[in-house]
Image 1 (cartoon, rainbow, N blue to C red):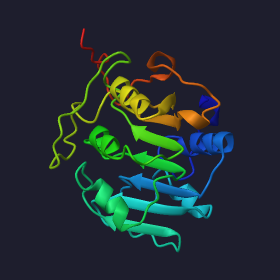
Image 2 (cartoon, rainbow, N blue to C red; image 1 turned 60 degrees about the horizontal axis):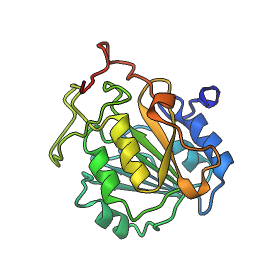
Image 3 (tube, rainbow, N blue to C red; image 1 turned 45 degrees about the horizontal axis):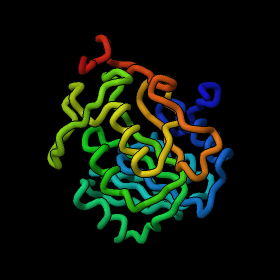
Image 4 (cartoon, helix red, strand yellow; image 1 turned 180 degrees about the horizontal axis):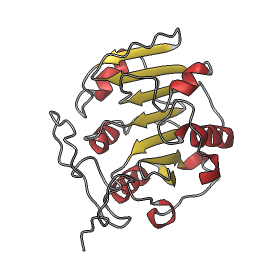
Length: 212
């Protein structure tokens, strides 16, 4: 799938993978939700916004992007408030794409959204850990990334979580930053293993961390 990587407004070619997956599984309501958008236009859903999708952004910093189809919420998203935040914006349980990239409690927020069933999920993973290692950062709602490698969760842990919630791992970006999941009932690609798609985090210079 690497040949489909392409940047429009994303950071590492996610736009092209999202476009490929949308073309593969189709869309329903053209609603996308992104948790952890940053303050610029560089994120995983701005390209969809420009294509006429209804997009919901959540970030602890204010974003100055203005668009008729955009609902932007300034909030620190946690596992305890994320469902309430979704309810406040009347986000349906079934929508087309969810992206989570908050450099910390991503695993815990994803777990809290178990009742929501987006078709496509994009999640940042911690590619400093190797393809076989389970690692989940302890829940800490006050956490802010400090530049170390003890953040978020390993690909293996995210794969196991999403599998238990009805999703297949299908791809990781070549920079070792984001993993893509498809809902099992609409996945024509078939599930991939961590061994199939794992990529090491591009800025991590050491050997991948292992529990062995």
